[in-house]
Picture 1 (cartoon, one colour):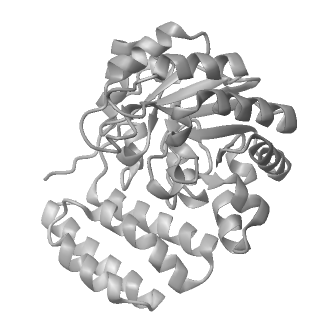
Picture 2 (spheres, one colour; picture 1 turned 180 degrees about the horizontal axis):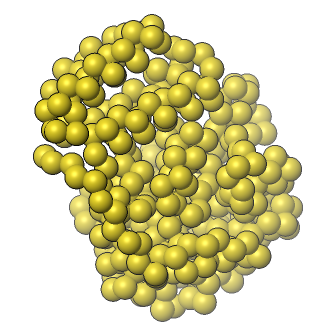
Length: 335
C-alpha cells in the first residue's frame, strides 16, 4: 500500500451551486449524517477538505423534548457559527412532536431540517422512525408539512429506495415528499432490508430524479473520489452524499491522495478538536477510538498499534504512542 501526494482537480459538476430552499451552497458534495460520528469535529474536518453541505447526526424528536440525558442531547445537536448554513437531522413518527423539535432546532441555529426516513436500525424502526416511514408515506408527508408549519425552514428528506426488494416505492415516496413541500431529497440506493449489504442501485436514483422537480442527491457505495463524478455524470443527479466513504478519509471530497505524514497530522488535528469538544478525557477516548481504526486501516502493524493505544488512558502517553507509530510508519513508507 503506497501513499503519494497529489491532488486531482475537482470536476466542475461538483462545484455547481445547489439550493436548499433559499439557501445556496457553492457545491454539491454532502456529508451523510451518521449517528455517533458526524459531530462538530468531524463535520469541521469534512468541510476543510471540500465537503459543501453538512448536517447534524440524527436525533429523535422525543429525545430533544423529553430526554433526561441532557449532555447527550447537547453533544448530538451542537452546531457552530463556523459551519453555517447547517442542517439538523430529526427522526420520529409524530408530526406534532417532530414539528416542535424542528422549531427548537431552528431556535438553536439550524438553517434547514432533514427528516430521516432511511435509518435501518432496529431500535429506530421499532419506534416508527427512520425507514419505517417508507411504509407510511402519508404520515411522512404530514411530518414534512408540520416541520415547515412550525419551524418555517426548508425541509429535506433522506430516504431509501424501499422497505424490501418487493416493495420499492421510491417514486411514490419521492413524489409525496415533493408535494408536501420538501426542498430536496437524498436517496440511499438500497432497501431497508439490505441495510448496508449488497450493491446500491443508482439506476433507481436516476429514475427518481427524472420523476421530480426538486434536487435529488444520491448516496451509497461512494468509496473513492472518482466515484463522485461517475455517479453525477452517469445518473444526471444534483449531487452526491458521502457517508462511510469519508471515515478516516476526509480527502475523498477533494481527491487528494494523502501521505502518511498528512494522515498523521490530520488524525492529531481531529483528536485535538475531539478532546476540546467532549471535554472529559475518558469520554473523548471512547468516542475517538473508532476514528483511530479508520485512519490507520491498511497501514503496516496498525492492529498492534491500536491494541496498545486503546488500553492507554493518559493523554500524553496516548499521544506519544501516536507519534512513535507514525514516525516508524513514515520511515517504512518513505514519507
